[in-house]
Length: 143
DNA sequence: ACCCTGACGATCC
DNA sequence: TGGATCGCCAGGG
Image (cartoon, rainbow, N blue to C red; front, side):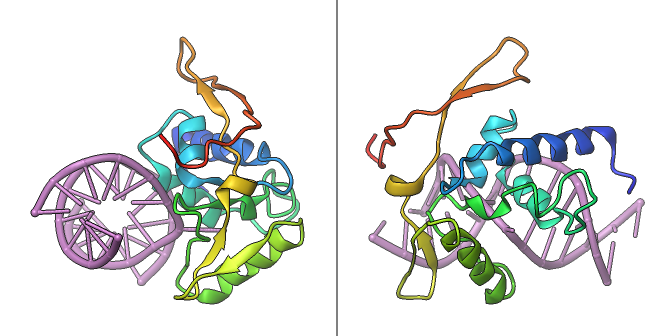
């Protein structure tokens, strides 16, 4: 487990941010990346979740980190190598009341307008400790 | 040490 | 509108 300290801090930040997603809500990898101060690395957020320990004794694990609440920017549950993975994520979301629909190509989608959680990010002096306030009114996708 | 892959996302054709 | 490319960078072989 010899990750560099920086990498470990990143993992920690990501897991902590994911824990802030409200029950029954979802956000994107990209938004988590922004929340932790590294807006250009949404991909690494995926890496973190991919490596989220199953072991309940781990500091961060599948039990205390709501990994299922993170989907991609298109509102689709990111397909892994195997479709079963995304399916189980859909099941986990449905278990908390989130409605998951299936697209023409079998994509599992969640309506951001209904379940999206994209708090405004307030820049701080250091750029590290980012504050976030949840704006109850989700801006659909108008800009 | 090197190369390929990838739970992403913004841009560029 | 949508597929292809690029940037990022940790993991795994």
